[in-house]
Image (cartoon, rainbow, N blue to C red):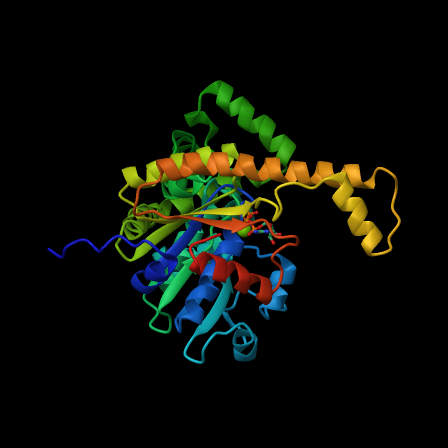
Length: 387
Ligand SMILES: Nc1ncnc2c1ncn2[C@@H]1O[C@H](COP(=O)(O)OP(=O)(O)OP(=O)(O)O)[C@@H](O)[C@H]1O
Ligand SMILES: [Mg+2]
């Protein structure tokens, strides 16, 4: 057996030794930004990178050249990359994940006949279910990853994950999807639906039959039949899905993959990411780094007095309100306090993190990360091991 890979300690090592990097974390902490920045950092090292992203901010997407928010793979133009120091050997391709499209592809792949696939894809409820079944978005992100994993055009794939309220949702997605398709309710529903294409209400308990009749009146003719037909057909594909879900989980465990755990410096977010990190460890899923985004940095000077502010105003010939100096002093004191708080909670994270999982800090910038230049700034910060 091969000896395990040496544990990586820097982003450069991760980028050099892994084929897939996955950003995970709670909603809004900076997963999409981090994924794009890591992808850019790798391209700057001459790698050919594919960034699979979900719902990037429109301005950032435009700045990368994704004018139409298309789900096709789009190569960022070489001159845009060159403007932030990416060498000719490096490239960056961005692709937006499309949950429904990925689901459709799976249906086509696993349906026993073309006719069955078409029937399912044309079911009027399929569109709704394919987008809103529990865990679908997360699961399809992983499916897409498997589909491109062996693509020889790329050296590295960076996968962004959906905006789940809870980072753990991502890890549980395959199981949740399988459970949703295989729940007792679903089986009951399918059983009640006869091959004649109508509900056989006599196989149901009287009370359930009454409920279904009432539901049928509310939802309009054919709704329940369409639903049951859809579920029966999905169930038909179920063996395929179950197998896939197990395979997806296997891929996430391989040496080629590493998770980047993104968090804000807020204690709740840090607690969540620590918990998630433990879950990954339990599952033998490799953790690459903690990335603490939007850290408040201490002001450059330790203290600001009213006298200093007044002197500075005078030197520049400016006249402000009488209490301006006091307000600036207060704002400065608040900034110092915020930085101290962040440092305190980060200290707790650092104490928790194992040696081989570095904690990289990215500062809170004055503006959103909405263009390539800002992205390059985040990339350089991560490369340097954080601030
Ligand atoms: N270090 C930073 N300084 C300032 N703004 C930032 C920083 N990092 C990210 N942002 C901004 O915060 C917003 C949220 O970031 P992002 O979209 O990357 O989060 P996310 O975790 O992907 O969110 P979601 O869970 O909704 O997908 C964006 O507008 C982004 O530009
Ligand atoms: Mg996002």
